[in-house]
Image (tube, rainbow, N blue to C red; front, side, top):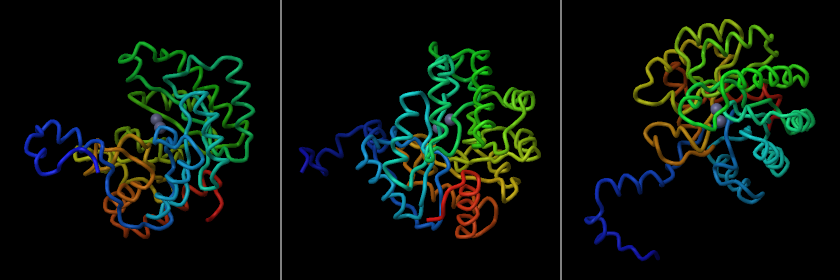
Amino acid sequence: MSGESVSGDAKELSAKQIRKRKRREPPPDPEHTRGLVDAHTHLAACGGRTAESVTEILDHAERVGVEQVVTVADDMVDARWAVQAAHWDDRAFAAVGLHPTHAADLDEAARAELNEMVDDDRVVAVGETGLDYYWTVHSESCADPVTQKDAFAWHIDLAKRSGKPLMIHNRDADRDILDVLAAEGAPETVILHCFSGDIEMARECIARGYLLSFSGTVTFVNAAELREAAALTPEDQVLVETDAPFLTPHPYRGQPNQSYCLPYTARGLAEVRGVSPERMAAVLGANARRAYGLPLR
Ligand SMILES: [Zn+2]
Ligand SMILES: [Zn+2]
């Protein structure tokens, strides 16, 4: 029992306190949706810092049909950790790289370590890399655009050398993402995680054969253009992800996100594309397994 009495205190809580309390509350379980793969999550940031807590998160996900996840690195500490998590539980796979905001950390030692890490059997992608021009103006510690482009080019080369997919983070940098990829030459598999571009960007990425991975943002009330992009993406180029612990799908926006919330977004995509949730989940799961080379469970 907690010290709070439910009925008495409820009246005294301000509207702001109630909203704050709700933001900490995990969303309820979605309807079971078989065969899904979370194409991009951050297990450590979701509270999975030990083998037990990782297994707990993945058990919860599996109960609603999310069978495998790709946990993605932000920085070097996170990269080592992601590889570890992928060895702890056979439902987890890792992506290693430096987030564009940390691009300045890509020194000789980091390059050497990433070169080695990428050969690990449990590492299925290089990333997240790319360009983030939002944080260059909103954070003093964010790498500048030139440093970001250099690091992005290096990760593109790493993906090509290793034969593993390139996982791209793009924020407010549509044109430069396309330009750097064209200049360097794209690897065989390119994934635009948490796709956020406009329709023109979507068309260009589709024409180039890239995969568009949609997160909870596609379910947001004000995301009509994103839904349009999701509707026109060919069936073999669409992926779904949580990017947890952020971007919790509607109507739970702002609450904590985890891989078990993936079916909300998968079902949202099914609606947008006019197919059954079962059919959508089968397509999304198959696409992720093919892109990352995951075994069937
Ligand atoms: Zn990202
Ligand atoms: Zn991410």
